[in-house]
Amino acid sequence: MDNTKRIALITGANQGVGFQLAKELAAHGHIVLVGSRNYQNGETAAQSIGAGAIPIQLDVTDATSIQAAAKRIESEFGRLDLLVNNAAISRSGRNEITLENYAATYGVSTVSLDEVRAIWETNVFGALAVYQAMLPLLRLSKDARIVNVSSSAGSLTLNADPSFPYRKMFSPAYAGSKSAFNIMALSMMIEHENDGIKVNLVSPEFTSTALNNFQGTETLEDGSREVVRVALFGPDEPGGTFTRWENTNIPW
Image (cartoon, one colour):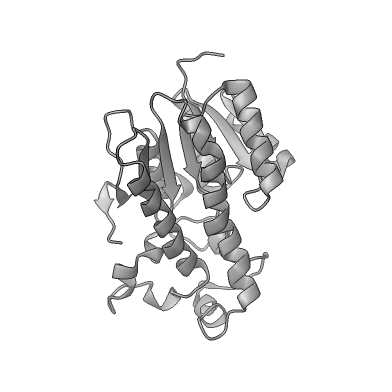
């Protein structure tokens, strides 16, 4: 293995923003571990990306899967340089609900507790579990970075503003899970302020993906630009940022 190449792990990389990021990191010479809950889907994605992409089975809601992925990375690569917490869901199962009906179905007075738990299990607790498992490998890197893929929909400051266009979509489900995920990211930033591990929080644009039943307004390439920009940061680039394209700060 070429030790000069950065080793990157992306969760939920078999589709959507994660797949686009994997493709672009591989094109920039990274070794990209394409994390996928279903190994065959990850294998298909990695084959589509080509050189530099390696599938790895990783279900962020399964502790055994997470530990197995960490052991494999340690055995085959000896370290991890970049962790991208990208895996996320907006609902527990596939449905054809429109954006117009999402707020009514997933509102604070209507969403089921089981649905909230399922979403948070992936978006919040899953990301925390992966972070904790991969941290020892990140500590072995000379230039470690964690990029957390969130959403401006989770910003409490923005949602407190009546003029925010997505305010009616805020609920304990997806948007609320992103608010909680932001807490996790801020906790990471604080914990690693002085140890050399850089932590960033980033929001893609409203990208057309399975997350929103392909009702987003941005293409995969355009919507992923900020995630790609930050994931390609070098050792002199900052941590502690929460941004969307292009390098626009998002309020907490």
